Image (cartoon, rainbow, N blue to C red; front, top):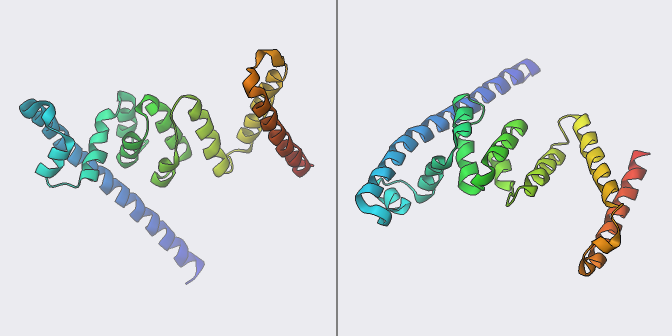
Amino acid sequence: MNEEQKKSLRIKYKKLRTAMGNHKDSETLRKFKILNEAFDIGKKLYGNHFTRHRLALDFEIPWTTTIRILALRKANNNTWKLIDDKKISVFKVTMILQTKSITYQDEIVDMVIKNDLSTYDIKKIRVNDYKDIDKERIRVAVERGFARQYSAYTAFNNTIKRLSELCLLEAKHLPKKKINKLRKDLVIVRNKIDGYIEVLE
């Protein structure tokens, strides 16, 4: 097989991946419209006794599929607009809303779009509070080698400035019980910095 044939097959392979993604999105939306309406009707008929588990049994759909699809009920207006604009797939959104905190829905969706994260990447995202957002952004950037070199430099520069400011803080303003741990952590970071400086030389 020559290079021209390989290139042609790669293009075809990519088109098939796109077609499969479009099919999954179409199916997910179709099922959501049905299950979402059915769930609302079930609640009106049976009250709080009507559950997603009951819905799954009645419609003969796997429990995991029902949970994933109904996760779209948590999507806010901004997320739906991004779906409509084809900025993110419905399938990825269901993954985010099913397993992640909806409090930080906008931030996580934005992270997924900007870094073109796969469903496998989405599973690895860990966000419990707002400070985790920046941690995850940096982790994703490091794993992907920083799409732009300048982003890597900016991340380093911001961290250095922040650490420099904190080093001006007097020890008396720190909790005594935490000083030993802080000292050990700083020594570990210092050793890593020393090692990295050598790499840069």
